[in-house]
Length: 275
Image (cartoon, rainbow, N blue to C red; front, side):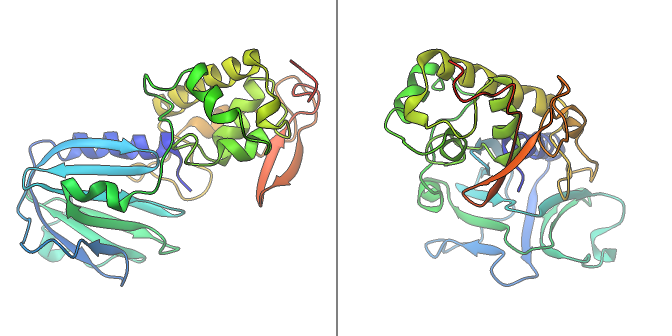
């Protein structure tokens, strides 16, 4: 599933591509991919985007018609910009579940092999009702060692599992939690409530660093993720432990399963007793 850096990369691409353009229509080719707010009793298109916001792994495109698009890529969803042919000549692509038609003979294909991705069309003031409970935004000013510590203080579950909880920190996923815990020298099995203040500070700092680096490199493409130009990201070339055999220090990386997810860590660099 695309995580925060991949979602932000796509959103940045959308903001650039849709600059000065008008959305003409939204088409759905697979039942359940597009969800329309029942209270929406008028055609919101044509409309121009006025702002682009990310909340966790969700992309919010607010339009000048008082309507918003909420896009969730889920596991295999991707948006691909197409400006090569007149719209009338473009056939529905394999695994294309929806399409956002733009003026200037441009469109966005929503391609999703697993069909879990969603596009919600709703009134802007109704957006919160279509989002789950989301926690701290790790690239915002609200994300500090103090606020993170407050979230972790009463959690007895392993820190790896807690950081994947979107109601604690929004946007983190399996790849980046493995990476940031390695950088912070924290064992993924350590109970969140047992972390020292020093360890929480390291986790907060490394979270910001690894996410910022990943965004700068266009995200991580290990399986399905693509930017809107259908090109891959580059951060997979800089991963230190995720799906690796050895860590940068030459130690053997161990793979375990936590809460149904694969965890990669170095038992020597991330000793549980380290404080």
